[in-house]
Each structure stands twice: as structure tokens, then as C-alpha cells.
Amino acid sequence: MPLLNSKEILTDSQGYLINSKHWNEEIIYILAEYENIKLTNEHLEIIKFIRIFYTEFNIPPSIRILVKTAKKKFGKKKGNSSYLYKLFPKGPAIQAIKLAGLPKQIKCI
Image (cartoon, rainbow, N blue to C red; front, side, top):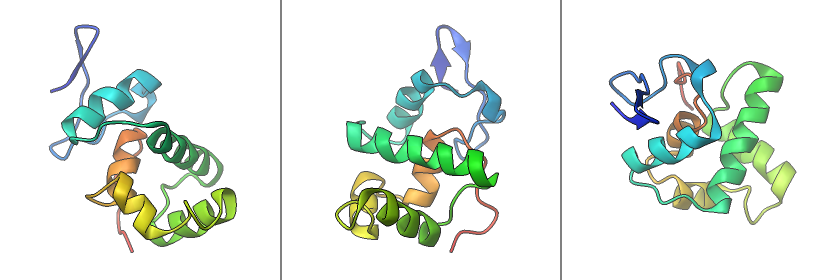
């Protein structure tokens, strides 16, 4: 299990936080390390965007919704699946949601 300040970060077997209320920005870096992602400002921008989406709609976005809403917010350069997959190669709707400390998608389309 990952550690933050000598405290275990409780995750399920797939690396999602057990309790999303324990999330903070420090945890992003620890979870990213386990996902083999070297974080950049571009990663953080998408992760924070996903958290805002979750706060507003109470569900993590599917890949289709993530692309659509990112395009509306950031424009075509960042609002496309190629860009998002470069940042999160195992799937933006999987890895970015995990780094954002949100619950796993029930069904991802």
C-alpha cells in the first residue's frame, strides 16, 4: 500500500482509494508513482477538472463525456482522446479518475 507521511493510503486491489474523502493533492503524486506516470501541469489540469466534474454531477465522467467536456473547457487541442491517452495511457477515464481519488466507474464507455 502507498504511504503518505508514514500513514497508509488505503486502496482497493486496483489502486482506487477506499475512502475518497481521504484524497488531497499530495496523494496525486503517490498514486501517480504507482501508475508509472510522471505528473505534469497538464495531468494536474485534467485531474482537477475531473474532480470539479464529479463535484457537480456526483459521478466520474466516462471517456466519451470526459472528451466532450474537456473540449468545451480547454478547446480541441486538449479536448480529444489522443491528448488524454498520451497523459493517461491506461485510459483517461480509469487513471485520471484514480488519481483524482474518485470511485471506479461502474461502466466505462
